[in-house]
Every structure is written in structure tokens, then in C-alpha cells.
Image (cartoon, rainbow, N blue to C red; front, side, top):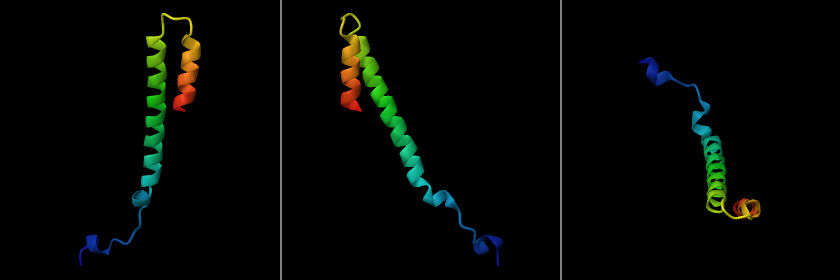
Length: 62
């Protein structure tokens, strides 16, 4: 009998999918929120209400 057929160790790799999904989801949420706020700030750079628009955008997205 081969040693490959008698492998009885259990590994946690198959159960760690929720952690990977949580990390990638959080990263996606942070990047999309930050990019939207920066986009609004750049679009309104010539106006005087830039800070207020960024705050409203951040609250609306978050």
C-alpha cells in the first residue's frame, strides 16, 4: 500500500474560506469607498464646498 493512500491528517485550509472572503470583502469596501470620495473631491476641487461634499459622500457610501 502506498503512503499517499494512508494520509489521515486533517488540514484547516478547507475551512478557512470565510476568512479569505471577509478579508477580500473588507478590502473591496475600503477601496471602493476611498476611490469614490477621492473622485468627488477631484470633481469639486474648484468649488468651496469640497469638504462638505466629501463628508456627505463618505456617509452615504459607508
